[in-house]
Length: 590
Image 1 (cartoon, rainbow, N blue to C red):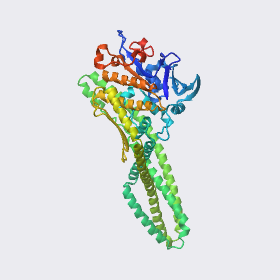
Image 2: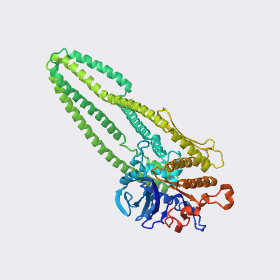
Image 3: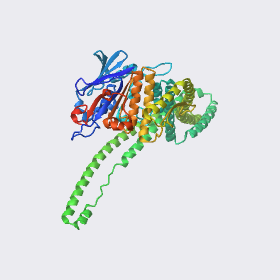
Image 4: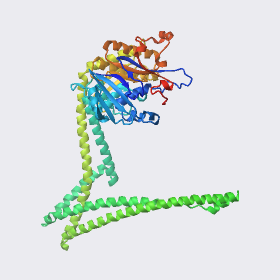
């Protein structure tokens, strides 16, 4: 299991912060100074983002610290120590070159690129049980987002199960969540992969159908019917040619003519496209510049002769400018037209050469007038075969895609049955999770209140679109604060479950800004609950950020909100105030 030890900067960018088991509070305080600008942007969330930066965040946090207001970070680094069993590891990362990361233990470091180190950290942080749960080292950045949540992605999170806080496939999310919950997830992963394959096949099928319709001007059904007709005509022509004794002498010529005909058709297709493009260029040659300057001048002379002269001169300058633009544009278009005409001439030359070659081959068949009927039959046969082969290729591709979709649908159905079997096998574990969720609602969030309507459940069923789902709800979940409770209750269920099972996953949970908009009484209840769990297990860190007005209350409010069952000051690991010298970087950076 992994615990955080400390985060600091060798370049003294910010004060060192040490972590301990139990509740760790990062506090925002009001200084009371006249120049104070409020406790937002003083460093609470920034500290969490520094931890996430150490854990190799790439797009979001790296982009954030590259903003102009963080120019002063150049030359600085952030260092994070964490503990896994009896080993202490260190991650060191610099802001100006975040792709290079230093990692090691006992002050012995090796240099890695970020992608390499993700795989190493994945092996340390997330271990699986092949009999129950599957985990891939490549999931490190996805899974760590459950344990490190900053204020921004916490607010973007609209679904308790979606701790990634951005669009993700449903079954990708379920794969991660089932792993965190300690439930079988390998078949869910297989289902997700198979569903992606099917979607890709369906997408390609739709694209191919559209392409066939646009190019040929007929629906796929019409083309298939026509192909049957063409095939019948080919058989009739072939039968008629069998009557001639010397047919075999011309089989090679027939194949050559067929190949040349296909090439001619391809060139004609390119030729038509180039002609259309040339016409498009020619259509945009001219810009209308027709303005009667003398008429404009006369209109303004009625007002003032000087004004008329001035307006005429101004319009002349504008027209001259537009003519210059038009000329430049015309030069560009003329050059493009020249290039297209050269391409067209080249295509026509190729078509002409092929026609000559085809004509020679026909002459080889046309040895005497008596062979005219054979020649005509060959011409028709080759034309029919060319048409058939041109269309059958696309239709065959389409049929291959349809077959792939059908095969994968069958495999998906089998996987769904495996998922149902998996869920039946862990019904007791799911029942325990339901009880844990309900106890968190009752003991941590809705103390002395009804928890009716709140539930957690996992259901599997024979449904192609939703073979398995996680359901999370709480009482009055439509209100803003209670919606936050839904996310909080789910996170705590997942976290306390893995702590109770003492699984080899991170034993820290960072909640940044989780108490925004939540009632003071609920804040007290949640922190007291987490303290009670720490007294039981002694092996986890619950790290939160909060402003003092969200978490500290006067004694006269204790009868309303309750009081903390732990030493608040000892739980506080960092505090920042709303004046520059007491912010995280000892300066204004908002």
